[in-house]
Image 1 (cartoon, rainbow, N blue to C red):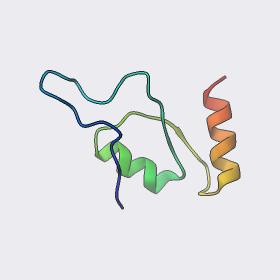
Image 2: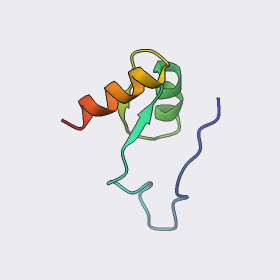
Image 3: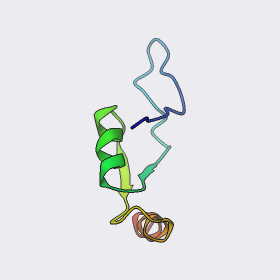
Image 4: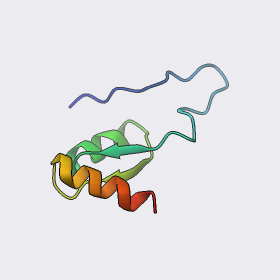
Length: 61
């Protein structure tokens, strides 16, 4: 599984912008993102668009 980082940290940076929220389409993707050092705000219960949308909506409340 590949995880694409949206921003490469520069010298002195602590990593991705803290205002960016990451969502995973399922537990496997969520685990991979965490393994890459990302803070995942939402993990869909099942790997479907509907579950991802529901998870994002819930995490934004």
